[in-house]
Amino acid sequence: MNTVTLKPGKEKSLLRRHPWIYLNAIDRVDGRPASGATVVVRAHDGRFLARAAFSPVSSIRARVWTFDENEPIDHAFFKRRVQRALEHRTAMVTGTGAVRLIFGESDGLPGLIVDHYRAVDGQREQLVCQFMGAGVEAWKQAIVAVLVGATGCPHVYERSDVSIREKEGLTQTTGVLAGDEPPETLIVDEGGVRYHVDVRHGHKTGFYIDQRDNRALIARHAAGKEVLNCFCYTGGFSLAALKGGATRVVSIDSSGEALATARANVEANAFDPARAEWLDADAFKTLRSLHDGGARFDLVVLDPPKFAPSQQHIDRAARAYKDINLSGFKLLRPGGLLATYSCSGAIDALLFQKIVAGAASDAGVDVRILGRLGAGVDHPMLTSFPEGEYLKGLWLQRI
Ligand code: SAH
Image (cartoon, rainbow, N blue to C red; front, side):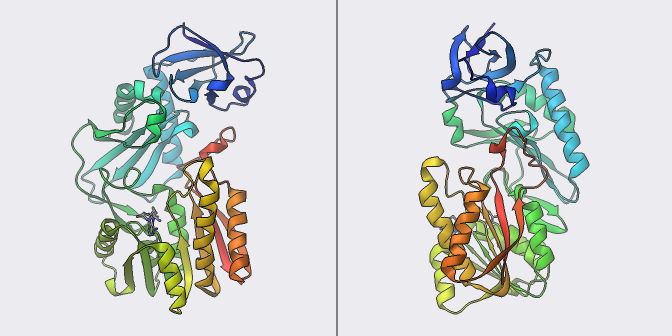
């Protein structure tokens, strides 16, 4: 039996049900567990703690499947976990064709992401998966079979083109896992707005599903307003603002390809293209030049890429967040609203708020917090796994 025995005292985080076992917590490994093999994790005194997936090269040397000594890791285990995740989504998520079905550790399946897209014409459903740990990689075939069985969707595509796999000793890979090659684009409906999703080449699995509630927030507050959406990608927030009745939406992104899809989204919704302006440009410079040119907005959205991919990037990332938020505040009319986000896991909600507060102060504006924002209910967070919170936002008003 492959067994991982921890150093004295290192069992504490597992007893609090945190699912990661770091290399430096391990006293010894008995047996020769292969990548992804199931190991029993024991405290130094021999007590059972968990069953986990072994990852021979990662500093997170094992990820917990179960804390229950009586639960074996087999096909039935994955079926139960997937079923539990699906029941939560069915009960909680409605009115959208894009849902995260499995959110890794938060659903008891460390390293696994599964998104489900349903096209508007009802012709096509598509599952898109990311396998980001040695354990889920080893169980890939079983997981795909369980997903197809549980959802009834025959088409499964893999988007494991994420650099984090290299930390697990895995190479990046994409391709069909079940069913047919995905169509070039799927059109999904979210809250009455249609979005093009390219599951093969789009960011993440094709769409920022996590921002659903935040798009709805923008739609609710956009009527009659001039809106600026910075880092717009395929126009998620821009389309929501148009749907909500914005008079003018200016959107910035440095990807011409993303902007082409954004324009196609305007067309797919039959919105008046004259209400939408798309700037293919660097956001940092453009925010400043808009301000210098005297532009002002009633509603600004700042949803940049992950500026801090890890702890060592925090300082530089903090300066970048401060820079764009400073410009964002300066571009707001008095009474104007700002939705500002960070998806850097390394920057927690408190630090993000401090950075934004610093930006407001430097901009010389008084700002009140109307709300704290995060990912939708299909990205739940375990109280025992705060690392699951990566997206945080602030909903602010210039007084
Ligand atoms: N807000 C989007 C997701 C943003 S993803 C949504 O809700 O769908 C980050 C986007 O920032 C990408 O589309 C990328 O092309 C763009 N980007 C990255 N660096 C940029 C820069 N310096 N200036 C403008 N856009 C940038």
